[in-house]
Image 1: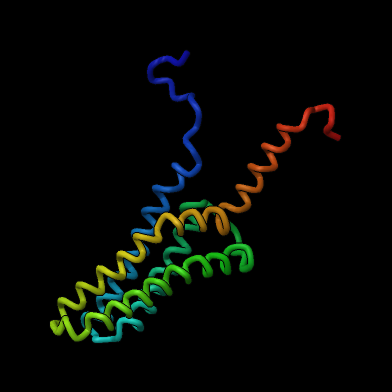
Image 2 (image 1 turned 45 degrees about the horizontal axis):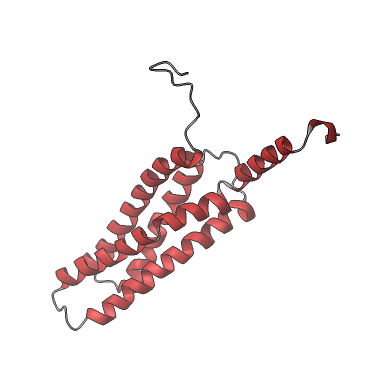
Amino acid sequence: MRRPGDRSGPPRSRLLRLFPRFAAGSAVAFGCSEVTFLLLFGLLGASAALSGGVAFLAGAVPNFLLQRYWTWKRSGRIAVRGELLPYLAVIAVNGLLATAITAGVDRLFATALQHHGARTALLGATFAACYVLLYVLKFVLLDRLVFGAEEARARREERSRHQVPTITRA
């Protein structure tokens, strides 16, 4: 029986520990992307596709660094095949979808919305909505395929060892 104030209970889920850090790192990356998009499209008059592509890159770099070093507490050299390429594949899908959808909405409403400020607000909201909708999927993929893959493999091996009776171990 646990006493009041006893915190020796089961540890919090690994995902419950990771998700708040992932959310904070993603918020920073999203801010970088959204500000870049609004500056390029809204102030400089760049196309929605160009603005979305550059905005994607502006968020991708801080996102990788924050997620790798802070969220998943990885250290050492970056493994190109094990981390960087899978990371780029996961976020490229997100970035390409957000850019394509935003450019599509721009083409769809370009003639209906003549006021540049209104168009900028619509496209900024569209760009943001794409990232929000794919947010949880991105977390799961980064955890399972990129930064948490080694940890998951170690947990599976540990569970496997405990399932084999001691007599059968070499």
